[in-house]
Length: 371
Image (cartoon, rainbow, N blue to C red):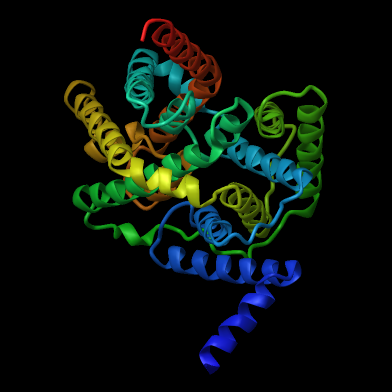
C-alpha cells in the first residue's frame, strides 16, 4: 500500500511542467554519463533523445520553443563548419578521381537501399531516403523535417546506424591498430576548457545571423545551412576562428535531442519496432558495402586498411573523427572524404528525396486506377 502511494505521489509530481523538466534534465544527464562511459560517439545527443522518447511514450509531453530549436541548429551548423578543414578542396583536387568514385559509390549504395525500403513500404515516402543518407546524422535529421519526411523515423534510423557504425569502426580500429586502445578516444564530456571570448562573441554573431537569414528566406533547415555556409566561407578566408565552448554544444545537442524525442509516441515506437529487423538488415548491408569499397581502396589505391575503412564508413563525420583521432591513420584523407560526401549529400539529398516521393506517389496512383 505504501509503495502504491509513493508511486502515485511521484506520478503526480511528474505532471507539474517545471518538475517534468527537472526529471528530464536529470535523467538525460545520467544517460549521457552512461553512454560517455562506453565511449559512444554522439552520446550528448543520444542520451537526451532517448530520455525524451521515454517521457513522450509515457504521455508526459513537453514543448521546446521553436526559436531555441533554431538556435541549436545554428550552433550545430557552426560546429560542422569548424570541422571542415580549409585544406579539404586541395586534398580532393589532388586525388579527385578517387574521391569522386568513393563518394558517389557510397551515396548510390545508400540511395538504393533507401529506395528499396520505400519500395517495400518499410518506411513511408522520402523518410527512407533521408534515413539512409550517409551524411552527418544531425544535419540529415534536421533537413528531413524541412522536406516533409517523418523526422522521428529518420532520427531512429540515422542514430541506430551511428551506433552500429561506431561499434564496427571501433572493432576495426582495434584489429588494425592494437597498440592504440579504441577506448582512448577523447571524450566529448570535457566541459571545462578555456574559452577565447573574443572569438566566441564573433561566432555567436555568425550563428544569430545564420538563424535570422534562414528564417527570413524560409530556407529548409535554414538556420543550420546558413550558419554552416557562413562559417565555412569566413573561416576559409581567415576572417573567423569558430569558438564553441563545450557547454554550449552540450546544450545545443540536448535541445535537438529533446526536440526529436518528444515527438515520438507509442504508435510510432510500435511502428519502428515492427520495422526494426528490416532496418537493421539495411544498415548492416550498407556497412558491408562500404567495407567492400574500403577493400577496393586498399587493393587498388594502396591506402592502409584502417584509413580506407574510416574514410568510407557511413557513420557521421564527428563519430569517425573521434575514432580516427586515437588511431594511426591519414587524418586529412579520412576527414576530406567524409566532408566531401557530406557536402554532396547536402546538395543532392532534397532532389533525390523529392524524386523518390513523387515516383512512389505516381506508382500508388497507377495501382489505385488499376487494382
